[in-house]
Length: 110
Image (cartoon, rainbow, N blue to C red):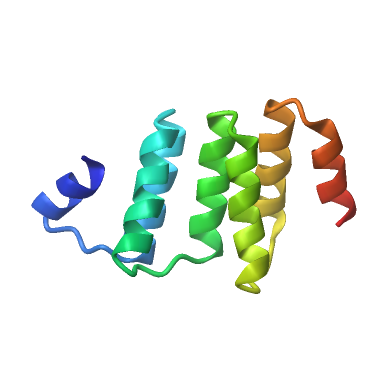
């Protein structure tokens, strides 16, 4: 629905607008919709970057979906993207919210 709404309003689908949409979904506790935007990006060949993936990690953390958050964190490594304070903090927070302190401590030592 979100992507359809963006199309109706003639918003351009690019990395920046999609990253903003993911962040908006995360902030409004609509984290599942944020994941739909990530999927939309993949299906429509819209490039993701560290900001996009950090937003997706944060959205997963809001939804207590630490496993999916770590998948996005892993994608950053696979694509040789620079992990930064935001992405690391978001991944650790997602693990904390999911009750997986061991995984969070492993991220700190990596």
